[in-house]
Image (cartoon, rainbow, N blue to C red; front, side, top):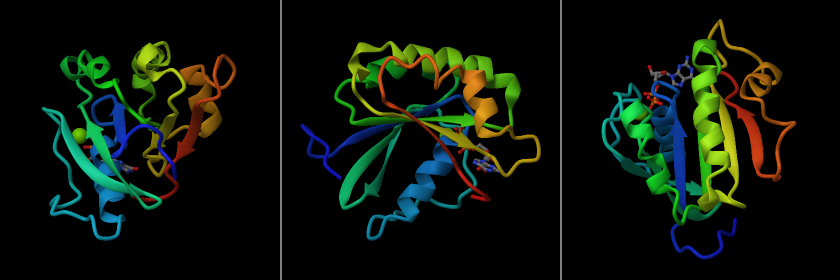
Length: 162
Ligand SMILES: Nc1nc2c(ncn2[C@@H]2O[C@H](COP(=O)(O)OP(=O)(O)O)[C@@H](O)[C@H]2O)c(=O)[nH]1
Ligand SMILES: [Mg+2]
């Protein structure tokens, strides 16, 4: 995969607290040949300060930035949007009570000029959980898919157990 203008692509992994960001990064790292680091057990602890985790996309080593998803962290997200190659926005598909807040934060990213033309992947997590909604319901809740100005949004679900 080709990432113009950046030797080591920076991928922001964003989403509310408990949305599965750290889990995703651990899995991406562990499934990247030669890169897997001693990130410890898969059980994750809340992210209090930003961290980076390397993973591979094709044969390109990327830095995955986890800024944390609690409210104080979220106010910092915009500071990290310079010079990014992509964004993965995690949404817990099993927690509808948080969809409105997730939409609020996603909408801010969609109008962020630093992210013009940058692909944003909306990643539905925890679809194995009993109360998780399907892809269509998640798209409706986030009100995406119909109102997009740019073709830069993908919806992807993690299928099955992580
Ligand atoms: N069942 C299930 N649990 C998940 C999944 N992804 C993450 N979790 C759990 O959700 C909790 C929060 O995950 P974490 O990666 O720490 O979320 P973060 O706060 O966004 O970094 C942890 O207990 C994870 O084990 C998933 O796809 N399915
Ligand atoms: Mg975390």
